[in-house]
Length: 106
Image (cartoon, rainbow, N blue to C red; front, side):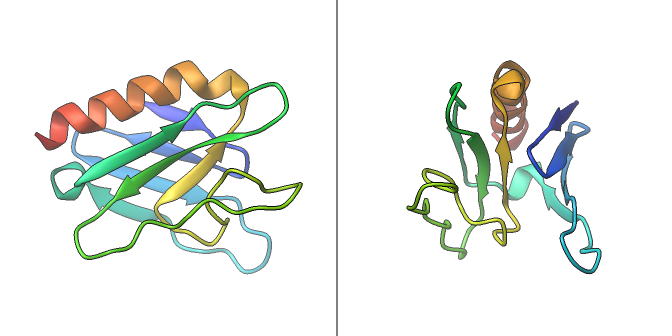
């Protein structure tokens, strides 16, 4: 299952979550997270005016907070490796991905 984000993708194969961000500078490595290690998820649906996001929470790691401002309001920063901003057209698939990850982790 793949979800197209604003600047990247989230893939889930039933066991591993892979977050690949489109680089602005040097190409970063994709972040791999095991579904069994996820302690929680945060999903905020996108609207016509604002992008939403999907964020995965891990034990011992603080969740990145939502940023303020006009362009990036209501989303974790781009540098957060455990989240990805999503456009409105990806809301349904992102909701399904979050449900699948939560089911696989329990």
